[in-house]
Amino acid sequence: MENRSLFKGHIVDIVARRIYGGELSIVDGKIGSIKECEVDENSPYYMPGFIDSHVHIESSMMTPVEFARIAVRHGTIGAVCDPHEIANVMGSAGIELMLDLSKLADFRFVFGMPSCVPSCSKEIETSGFVLGPEEVDNFMKRDDIYFLAEMMNFPGVIAKDPEVMAKIASSKAAGKPIDGHAPGLVGTDRSKYAEAGISTDHECTTIETGRAAVNSGMIVQIREGSAAKDYAALSPLIAEAPGMVMLCTDDCHPNDFVRGHIDRIVRRAISDGYDIMDILTAACLTPVKHYSIPTGLLQVGDPADFIVVTDLSEHFRVIKSYINGEKVYSSKGQYTASRILERSVRVQRDLVLHMINNFNASPISEEDIARITTKEEDIIVASDGSLFTKHEKGPVDDSVQKMVVLDRYTKGAKPKVAYIKGFGLTKGAVAQSIAHDCHNIVAVGSDDRELVKVVNRVIEMKGGVAVSDGTIMEDLPLPIAGIISPLCGHELAFRCTLLQEVIESAGCKFHSPFITLAFMCLPVIPELKLTDKGLFDSVNFQFI
Image 1 (cartoon, one colour):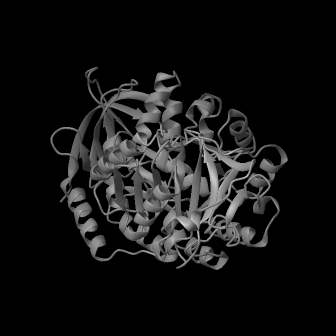
Image 2: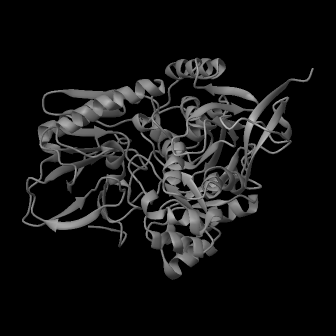
Image 3: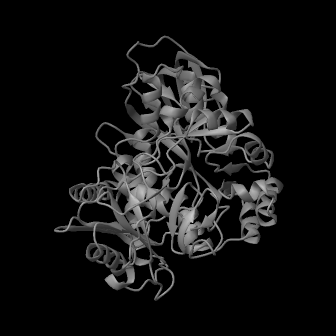
């Protein structure tokens, strides 16, 4: 028996770049027909759903099912996902877990195969697993892997490192796109990187690097996440090269995610006066075409994946979201389709019973992190809204705190210590097992006693976040691989708000201190980072 539904309103056709009054029918989960007709000016607008063109689900601390449940309320109906966070911890088993969970959600997830696990060699940082060319080749042959995820080893690409080139060759042989990661790359090096077959970059942070990427034939993913915010610098590309731009969040913390997603970037672009069709090309059309996402674009015969919005002003609201013709979100009454909610609850329950992890760290003492300071230290300088750091030399004064990184995978490992400026902690400390990309324990604190306290709490939880302001300690266990929680998204957002309040009480004023802290270990983003092996100069690619 045919299952048929009718919808009437303003049709936003981003393929033909026109908006018109019409009536569309859904037949057995697909767009059966679209007929032009007169509609009331107050009628809702029907349009393709938003796509996050580059995201690490693990950074939301949610499972894929819970991520989908939150995303659809913002009009996001698909995401291009790189599971390299959990792959660094759990290897292939972590990737399989994310793939299996994603298939339980009414959502258009497309996953890539992580290209750099770990992001650098084992001599630079310790990861839970190493995935080489053979593992990459095996995954790239699968139908549920859509692309080779961000190639962070851009020096290896430029130098044509054999292992790097073997991974790229596997993706080319499978006929799948290759994602990039090349912070600050311009000129000849940018051209060499693009010529290797790499087609996107989400690490452009200036209009100069963005234009360099576009000129080399690469699509720029304008990132507006919790910590890295590049829209202000890169938004002119929406008008200059609308077909060469996509929108993404990369890393989105729970308390930001529940408030908004790609819809927030779209509203901002509308407010800034960019052409609505150029904006929606970046938000909806280009990622679908580039990654061959099996979703609809509101064309006859497409899967009936679309959203309903109040209008196309900067104040638009998402009224409903549909996947395969099924309502998965409604702003009136029902929070989400009951089957998504039921699946989410069931998945969370099952994960509690079968959680995977890889955590062997031993408790530390104050003696382990004691250090005699010199008159001139190499200091990491962190800043709000950026994953980049600066390298400063100078004395350890009141503006500088101690930073600790501890290998979580090796029992009895000793922590590495350095100094960091920018977090502003005047008391207390913060520690977490979210530390890109290897997810060792990273901590910053005002004194050794507080540092030891929060680090050992993370070890006791076998992964999570712990914050102290010297009086109060708040924590959040992350029992799934030390980076994901089985809690629902809004509970996570509430818990993260409590963590934020304590770290603010300790003196930190960053908007997203936890995501910023997580990137203080990533050696492929300049200028100076601390890994479990020591202080690393990311510009000259060597230890100090």
